[in-house]
Amino acid sequence: MELSLEFRSLNEIESLVKSNAISPCTVLERLMERIHKLDTKLKSYTRLNLNSLEECAKRAKSSENVIPVSVKDLFDTKNIETNYGSTIYRDHFPSKDSSVVANIKKRNGIVIGKTVTHEFALGIISSPTKNPWDLRRIPGGSSGGSAAAVAAGLSVFATGTDTGGSIRIPAAMCGVTGFKPTYNLIPRGGIYPESWSLDHAGPITRYASDLTLELELMTRKNFIIKGRESKKFKVGVAWEMFEYCESSVKKVSLAALEKIKKELNIEYIHVKEKCLRFKEMKHFHEIIDTSEIALIHRENYEKYPDSYLDSSIEQIEEGMRVKAVDYVNAKRSREKYRELLDSQFKTLDIIIIPTLQDVAPLTVHQKKREEVDDISEIDFLSPLNYSGNPALTIPVGFSHELPVGMQIIGKNNSDLRCIEFASLVQDLTDWHKAIPQGFS
Image 1 (spheres, rainbow, N blue to C red):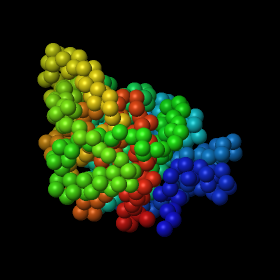
Image 2 (cartoon, helix red, strand yellow):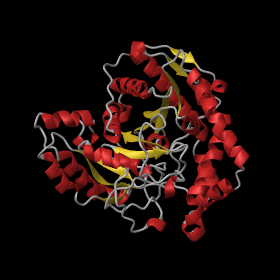
Image 3 (cartoon, one colour):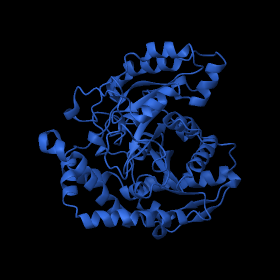
Image 4 (cartoon, rainbow, N blue to C red):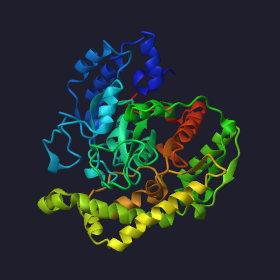
């Protein structure tokens, strides 16, 4: 069955525009129509760029293609209200675009609207956004609006941020592709910070093969993969990590690994969990994260304590208790861990690990932080923010009719290898093409 435009790849859409099969603004028009029709129940957008169709018509006169981009409400957008997920910044209209948004506009991108973020990106619930696979469940976060919009066909490309999993968690829960690139690959100017040392910006999309184009839009640099060949890949699997997964998620993941092995005609190399030291590094990540959260929010928290969720307050106050000696130690240990993790790739191109231990949970109250910690096995995620290594999650099947994701991680600055492998997998499988019921 042929997919409708909103579920096709950016590369395919570009080909259709070049062949005059569709106009440069056809996809934007289609997305706006679907958003008005379907987002009343999904609630993935906080607001739309009401001038986007007019802007597209102007851009189309001098450009072969115009790419609609959904922007997480953590990125500054000139003259478009930006709240960072907080009532503190109600009626806040930035005077200039974030670096990423400015780059996107210079590369024929157009902002379609702002997507929901969890308050200041400090959680994974992303209320009021629903999970398109089951509206009773959370979409994940903090880039929940972006992931839900892509999954439901209300976006073809959305921006996200990831400090401890905030791109990968919602991408996995919503059944789409999410990429946390190497630290500092994408500029973070004009993005409200959670932690300067750990923040990453990245794309959320349906097709891994679109990621190079999306990186080009976000950075104004060129990213080229010359050709995809599975025989070139040496693939490691941290089998022990899958033992932490819920039994059905584990079963789906192992079946996916077997299918990937067969389809790509590759052999796996076992990587011991203890060599990755994820459990130990979670502690260092948390020290840096909470202490920097406390500093970033100190002034606003003093002025507007009642405007923060309890779960955000817990993180701020925890950070205030961090000792300087512990913060410095965590920062100094970071480079050693980066070297240790990169050393695992001396004979490997990528390592495969789970994204989450379970599928998206039913909607939970946002007040208590421990509820959030119970939802996500952060050990699979935050150490890669600490080390800065590229990490990409792709959908690999379903458990109880809900998406399951799997992570592809690489050596620092090997972003294209991760993308190439994920694209190979998606060339030979259809997990990423699944569409939630009610959104086709």
